[in-house]
Image: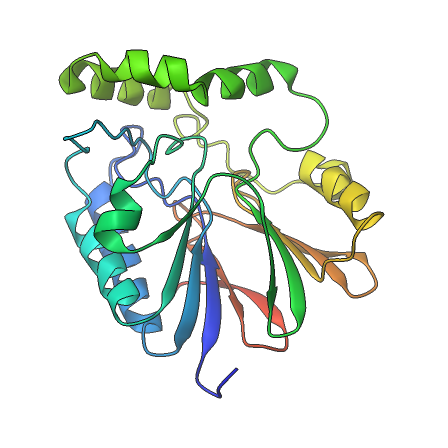
Length: 248
């Protein structure tokens, strides 16, 4: 990697979250951060829940997010590889963002080698032991038949349903604390099981809103990126080491 180039990781911006009152302020901060990293970034990984709700009709996409969409397109147009992972809030991203913005879309985990280090990347929802109820719900959300049926409804109705659902999320109750039992975290347990079969230098997730970086084994770290609601956190890899940081 050239001296100035770095790889950035961020998740859980939740743009447009109806449970929050500072969406415009947070979006402007996110765009400011994107603008600041564009000169030294070689790749950017957006690891899910960038939008709090997203559903693409064939000819219609949700209103808003103009600043963010424009800045992401600017980064992609400049030659920066921008990877977009679908999360549980923006699972219904299809072809609009790749074709219009130039992002690389990932709908499941992604294994990649970057500067000689192996990365296991995923949003993190539905991974690990337990929570069978949510895993069943997640399967329904990924059903192409149900997606087709949902798309037959008017956008005003579907967006309203999406926002009502989001208001029931943990954002409403501000359940975004640190964990005292990180070794029992389902993502941690899952990563340990993967590591028994294949080595990765870094396992990096979003979803849980925790800010975690801890060893899984010698030369293997487990990372949860935090969020852009209270912590304003992100990860950066300079070709030699990975760091978690908070935006000023």
